[in-house]
View 1 (cartoon, rainbow, N blue to C red):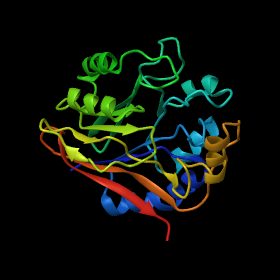
View 2: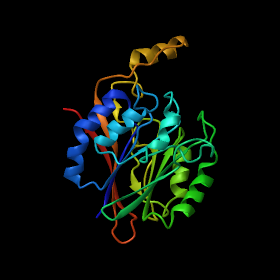
View 3: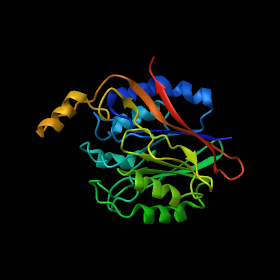
Length: 261
């Protein structure tokens, strides 16, 4: 029996630290086969660097996904091709560097992973996530036993629609980006585990991982403001999916929220 742990958006040093402190024991206790994490907010809350990707990999994350902050850190576009376990959103223009998907094999399971960006209220130029998902499903059908598809999107409607569109074609469809875990984790009728947003891994005494005072001041004054990463009430959030042995459809999905004592 295989178990896949998906970890929601890792935010800054607090998010990285709780991964280091909590992930190894969780993997051992629950018999996790593969760990996938969105790390697009790992570098000071915006973007990722090669050094931090390697750090997260050393803590036990097998595959790192990214979102609309993929190019926020200077020079990462030159480093991403050297990181075999990192994939950028698949529906970015083809001339963008980086892999559009990753396939990892562990304990006899070949898992294909890719991310699609939503197109509602998102800043990056991206092609249709439905069309991109369909094309990659066809490309990966003989290369992977199971698929994990991340939907990095702003609106719940777009995420839910993609969940139904992909039902029966992936083991897990999970949303990211809004940093708020949703209460709708379930297995859809054709065997795909689904959750609209996995939440963030970072400080919850915050506004989406940033210090509350700075965010409130921006809302109330409209003036430009730096948004430092917050520090308190740090949690590791995501979901744990158990796969069926006969067809790699989902048997169950469980939301995960690990808190520091």
